[in-house]
Image 1: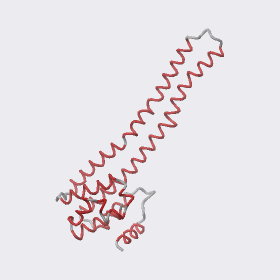
Image 2: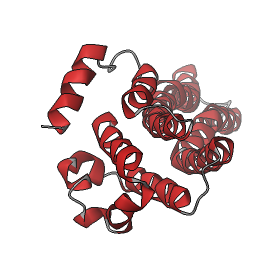
Image 3: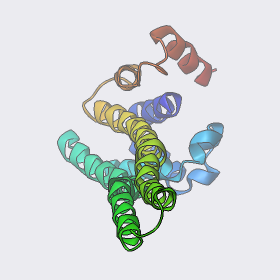
Image 4: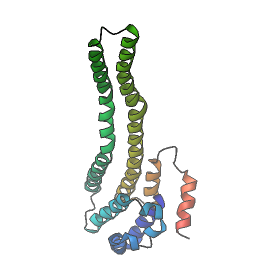
Length: 208
């Protein structure tokens, strides 16, 4: 992504915004975007970049306005992406209560059989408590961790898009392409962040 943004901002800096018009209108046919097939599979990332560049081509070059517009798009996308996670969170919150209801129903059923021998009553009470166990087990050991992982994945993807925002806004603020991309690199999560020299080598490879 950083190499792609470097190529785009360098072209704009040297030749003007109109030089990339054909690339952003049909990114699937663009020689620039085709060099990065993994990014091409991320439809939101491509649309996010192209839509922002279209705004620049229409003379919307106020960094603050562009930042606000991009931030609004990112918040909307992130909220929509977290929809499944919110549904699973609601399910995880409700499962213990369902388990309690199952236990209460089991106890009610047991109370209707108080004349039965102790071994029968013990089995019925044990069955009633299985409902509580199952509700807690599913909530805290299955659905809860699953929704947490989904949120982590969505947050990681959101961070990826924030880098696009930061690089393009840095470009609008008049920074050189190398500086804009370095600002973006600084916001890459530490566990996947390339070093300054790794990024420099990658950028040099794009100009060869």
